[in-house]
Image (cartoon, rainbow, N blue to C red; front, top):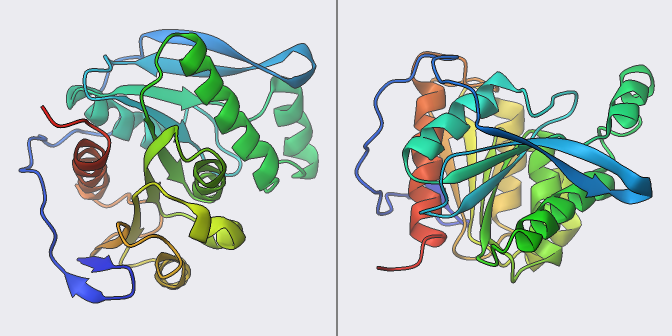
Length: 243
């Protein structure tokens, strides 16, 4: 069920589904591992896969996770099959990740995490790709994605959030220009309430999609595939230029 920005239920246009059922972990490895420079001569790692016929999607993982998130890898493979390039990004350096395991001090530093998204965008630009980019955020990574989108509107063409925490970027939601799709499991009532409140503060091209029967992690059969299909539809509609 899709809910518009404060409008109640409606059924928007969706691209016809072209995705088969993907078993979790059934995809092959992503093609390239790259190092993206960050402050103090350190790097974060990223896995880059697919071709960018339809555009590039940067994945912003949740707290305590990494570019190796099996759920994000699963969605990335389906987006690659749909013609998108995907960039699965570590948000912390190796030293920061080690310290965070002990102190938890970085995983909720949304400004730091959003800065890493900006550095990934700069890497894409240095590579010669100046097209608008899509962001796919999960959990707390959704807040970092939204904060990045608010501060770099010309470069972010669309945002998708999976089980996200947009409330952690509440103060900048009105500044997000990119059409944003918030995807939440119907069996995740606390996060659903946070997203219902947040969508009202986003632009009129944004929507909330409730996947019935899904919990916070979308571990139920077929539910993560549904997330990937919704994301591909959204990115194709809002990120890919008309042909």
